[in-house]
Length: 163
Image (tube, rainbow, N blue to C red; front, side, top):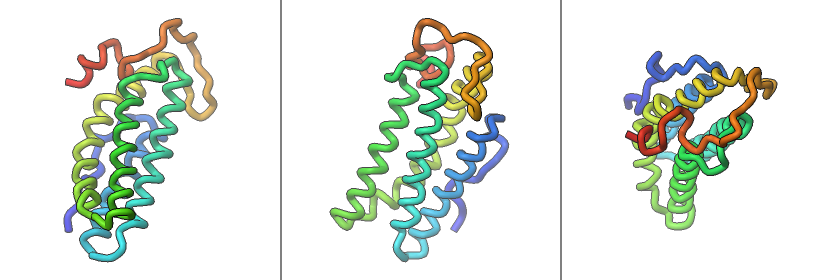
């Protein structure tokens, strides 16, 4: 079985924590696909992916909160949509004994992650650099704007960035 997504330089955002987190997500997506292809119990692989995704998004949410994003911003909304889908996939597997959504989700995430990273996460990393934010210490070298950011992280609106 070939990988659904291969880690490459095109996914690198030059933010060590985020790059490591994205590389781990790539590995977990491929691990889920391998577990499903092997025909055994894929729930441990799916749960590892779900746990990782919750922690991954929580890390980005902290960074956004620390650097002046409004609680309701389109980057956070996209995170919530993905988590909602993952929880629904788990529900289908456990309550309905339906693994079809689990078979589909790996390919969907393999398409979603590069686009999300290129658009939203890259904008977040750029913004963090603009305010001199150190995600390890939480220190900001520059004061934040009085206006909370509701877009995805750049000067454009959500509709501009979603294209």
